[in-house]
Length: 486
Image 1 (cartoon, helix red, strand yellow):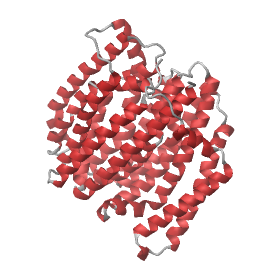
Image 2 (image 1 turned 90 degrees about the horizontal axis):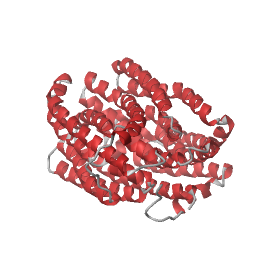
Image 3 (image 1 turned 30 degrees about the horizontal axis):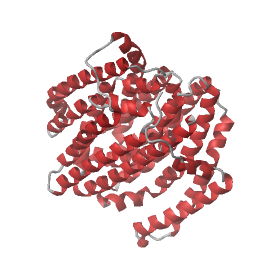
Image 4 (image 1 turned 135 degrees about the horizontal axis):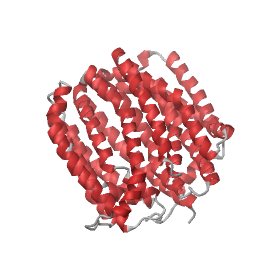
């Protein structure tokens, strides 16, 4: 079958995985937010910062190196697995020893036991990263979707049960650990691959050469995404971090539904086009159209409706999160398409370019966060959004040198979604002005969603009727369940 048909089928399963995963996650998240205090979310968010850092080091970039390589031998897989496992064991031990010191540094004694237990996630990750990378390489996103949904559902049930029976913050901890534990054997069974007791330096070197750039990229992404949590947790405390986490996590959930769901598919598909830059360029335009159509109305709607959405989902006590969500929503519009730029650069064998761009963004974020944190969580969110828009032209210039993109073609790809979102936003603002507050937040939300969907759909169908067929193909293609091997 053609690569386009294979990638479309894989994208459909990737979307199903993310939609199902996020649906389960959102339900669990909403219930837990009503049962637990903001400080509980803040403590787990703070501990998760360190765990995420450890997981990036465990991976060492080998997962992306496995996906990107045109020729992958058994020795490459063995090297990736054993290097990840040794790193995972070492980092787990390090985090267990460092937990009391980190808790003292943040003046949060409750952080130490939470961090100790969550460090076990590093060991679990070291046993599963190679298997997951092999499934991604084969575009076997049907299996990935099934594993993700099952593990998230089991973890969610455990977390909710513990929260309802009074375990407090530990319900969040064990929700994550159980999810990872369930995922591990399912990944091993899906790949059918088992490592052999050997390590070849000759096969390790090309993986490390590619992966070291990915590690640097991931570390810089860590600064981009987690420096705000660290600074808020240190200067403003776990309660403020809890409010910030709710607003930020909802934006991230929305990004996970489509852009991040399609990113592994885009990377794998573009990697197979790396010898034909013209083909990569056309694929990038098409992916841009699809992502913009799906996500522009979502983030424009969030910008207007957050003051009603947050209390409706989590209760009035979480209202401070609404402004954070409104300020962060515009960055979703940018990241929706910027993620494709990174995928194209890595697929073309230039992770060094992505590394340099991410370093620039990380430095700007760190400076912005350090200055803004003294004015509160909304100022931190604003610093993140402003940085993104100021530096986006630099990313465009780098990718343009590689693919010779047309700014006009890119604008044409965005035009239907941008026009529809602009009309929809105007309609939502008018509803906010005209509907009385006495109508209630649920009534305002229902009317807004229906009117927004109708106005956006009408504009898009008028400007780009063919895009309906593009979206249908994403869901309608059928292919062999095993994906494609290369």
